[in-house]
Image (cartoon, rainbow, N blue to C red; front, side, top):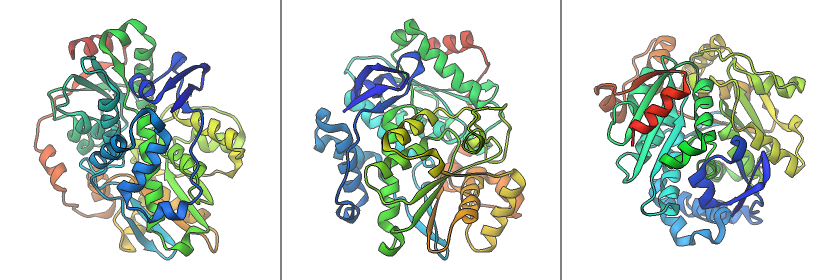
Length: 427
């Protein structure tokens, strides 16, 4: 597998190098030079989730890792389902929260851990540095917890993720260091990028990232789009529209990659909260990020989504106009209204899934089938959902366990010098 740096096409790397390195020069994202294409998608959809995902990911990686190795990696990473659940006539939820940390990030986080173990030198020092707006932190922390020779440092915006999200990854200790940054998620992302720009630091601690900027995480996410379509009635596959709750835009990137390699999807819809840089860009053609606004869908509180350059690159290469993307932005009041409507119809959701559901329903045409992504278990946003629905959602066992544990996070300012010290102290 050969990948190139979107900011410097002269920098080309293998899959293993991309996984170990995370980002390229000038903070550039890596992107596959060629994409596999599956001509007989119907046959692929007949396979079970693990067998199908192994075939897809092996086609991406190529001869760099044996097919048997990739199959073992997938089998270890994807030990939980991604069920499609009917919500109303012609509209389905793809539930991605049945993994150990109850969020879609489990797929990418666990596959990245397997990938890094497969491509790393035995005695090499590795430090994972990542930023989270909520769910990435837990998925990465649990995927790498207790792994030999790997240190993990996770940054998150203090007071801007749900308390239960925080408890899921800030209570582990061991090789996991968590840092509450006095700032926004965009500040956390900027600190991560600054660390990668520091060549001496990067080499000193073996720096890597587990954000969706890491290609292995993104590749894993392609697989559950195929799993969604495999569960739909065949007649529903002809006019399929998928709505994706979007913050950093890795999830939508993965969906578009799935379409590019053969998955039958008529169109995608990018659904955001009021941090609507992309919807405004698609409407006006002007990229104009504004200060991040805190919302009840906090995992999408991102004003400068890292993965957008990959989407533009893919659309250009495939000859898809950006005007083929649907989009919509939803306020907190509208999100709450939608949660109540869904609950009344018999489906318990959380803010991010509700946003995708609302935008999907507004744009779904007659004869189309809609799928929206549910990216986290409603209990991860218990305080918000309980208040809106006037309910008391019981905590699943993983959340109940970590909720009873003490927070171990450090608190630091939005200051790169402070982060460098944390990274060195973690060794």
